[in-house]
Image (cartoon, rainbow, N blue to C red; front, side):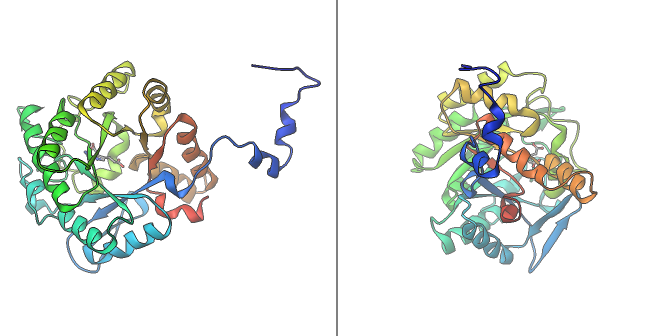
Length: 328
Ligand code: PBG
């Protein structure tokens, strides 16, 4: 690998000026690398800030098209929709997930009607925005039921596909759900609807602000450790990915991002499938608060985002996606 030695070889020569550093750069960010998460809320003409996530908002549907239009103009390939669900609409079964008039369904239709194929729409498949206990599936004696939850996730997937969702993103970590969803999509004529599996989703302490954003924070009973992955493990992550690929996933997600760069690299080296990293809410809040308090400068954002590319991610779900022109 090394073809010379000091003093004839000086690696600092290629770093001597900015033009040269640009010339030899190995990784960079473009707008194609980003997916913008958008939080939705019922009501009219509102843009509500989220306490724990500076500069991130929940939008009512009448403001949504403006947000999506901006995303298109910035060249982003896809947005991800997340609903804040009113407490009154939550119950233990999360039935609001299957309501064809729910926020996500209405949002998909609005976006598709106006923008057609100008931008992709990704939707979470999971029950946590809709359940009164805050879990991603059906709860029985403190345990989240697998197969019974899958039945509902399949229905939620078909509904979202019918509305026009391009990419279904099961984020629930039930076993076997990718296969069930794929089978049902094909049977129902949605052969081209993609599945981005949250194949590797760790039971993480970095999701706190998101749970505030979708209104499931105070509700969560216990933790999600009996379905989301143990952060002490990495071989298990490879088993998850290999199963999901066999079951029909088109892309896989690694989540959270920054503390799991080793996992992104591991997946990329072992499977030749697009890998998406999710820079989650807790990462965003930590960076933003550090910047706002002056503990660090805003270049820390680019540094952390480039690290995802260096680790092998094809794209990044990031709350910075709509703020890139100010960053890169
Ligand atoms: C829910 C879901 C979560 C996130 C995306 N989908 C939270 C959780 O599993 O509790 C987290 C995103 C973030 O923290 O930014 N299935």
